[in-house]
Image 1 (spheres, one colour):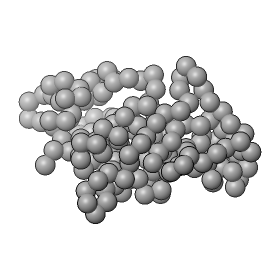
Image 2 (image 1 turned 90 degrees about the vertical axis):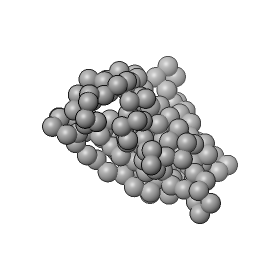
Image 3 (image 1 turned 60 degrees about the horizontal axis):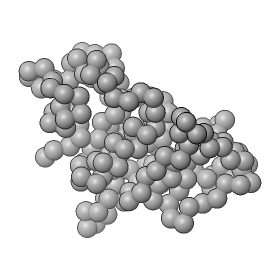
Image 4 (image 1 turned 45 degrees about the horizontal axis):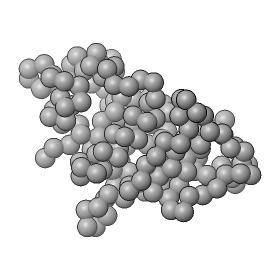
Length: 164
């Protein structure tokens, strides 16, 4: 079964890997991914894996990405999130399993970055509005929240993206 954590998928993203199929040396290749917008990277990785029907996607670890994945898990868009270390390496990765319904369709049909590096979008708590379906993700001084949680806590912040 092909997953986004498999050797074939990793080679398609990072180029050819060393013989034997281990991920040693992946760290140098992993830095070739866009590092300007890690949120857009995780969004596109999850969206592409869900659209292709993959069971898992692997992305480089950061605390923000882990918080984002945990929020998606709490809202039911992702079934499992776990952090792991590459073999004999110092880099950590995050494995994310997208959620699917009984018919095999992804629960994520729309995943969009709203605030980006070239145009940051901030909103006070009073002006946060829910999308017609799904959730908006807001980065506040107290962490990542959905727009409903941020409104309840009266926290405004950067509108990271929306998911449905």
